[in-house]
Image 1 (cartoon, helix red, strand yellow):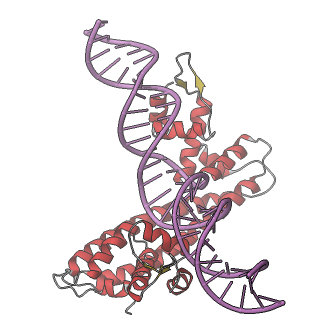
Image 2: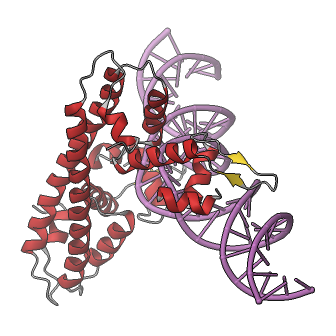
Image 3: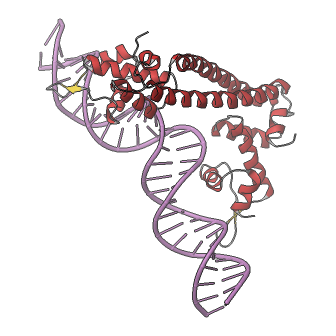
Amino acid sequence: MNIKEASRRTGLPAKTIRYYEDIGLVTPDRDDNGYRSFSDPVLHKLAFVGRGRALGFSINECRSLLELYEDQSRASAEVKTIAAAHLAEVDKRIAEMTEMRDTLAELVDCCKGDERPDCPILYSLAGQD
Amino acid sequence: MNIKEASRRTGLPAKTIRYYEDIGLVTPDRDDNGYRSFSDPVLHKLAFVGRGRALGFSINECRSLLELYEDQSRASAEVKTIAAAHLAEVDKRIAEMTEMRDTLAELVDCCKGDERPDCPILYSLAGQD
DNA sequence: CTTGACCTTCCAGTAACTGGAACGACTAGG
DNA sequence: CCTAGTCGTTCCAGTTACTGGAAGGTCAAG
């Protein structure tokens, strides 16, 4: 299977698949003409990484998870450690963004949005609170 | 005032202040020895950008806001447009992250985290739902 | 006159792609 | 057999917003 079909099946852009090969996440076979040839296991790994990325795992976390997935003697505790750490990160990030959002929403709400220069958003950014 | 003091007063790393000069956000004066010399207005602009960044505005949004701030004849509607668009982005991002978070939390919750290889997190990433 | 804290510039690296150029391979139609 | 069009390849550069580090100049204190 060529890269386009692999792209279609995994939902990953062809560019991204090439990039994943570059950084050693997957190693598709090659046909005699130099074209990449995607076997089912490789396709499977790509989809695995795609799902990991969709859950916000970094490439390196995906790499570790992939290794654990392939290691039949893994302990689920190792996986859980990675995922729990990531979850904590996500929670923190959401909390930060929510705080930001609320401040922002308040400012937007206070701004009349007319043709006059008077603007609480700018005043706040200027530190005139 | 030299860069260190400007850094202390704005809370921005000196490196960042130099970077902001590089990209033309601010233009501090120079002393005869080549050192940057920060006047109050420049300091003020730096603090403005710092607050904008803390609210999640991109550098370019900060640049636009700064221009509007300095334009006495601005219409607050212009500012509101930028801020509201950003707010919508933030809201979208928070929604995405929250969805991610919930899926992740569920998986983490289901994983026993022991020495056995059995792991719902990996199974889910592998697409075995 | 030396030490230490400051300052300068410039180069490179980060994360995870994405766009584009330049060129080769393959297939279908005339 | 030629050609057009779609696919594939590699490689280089750009994105965002910094950050780290090297090499070297400046300044104030003792």
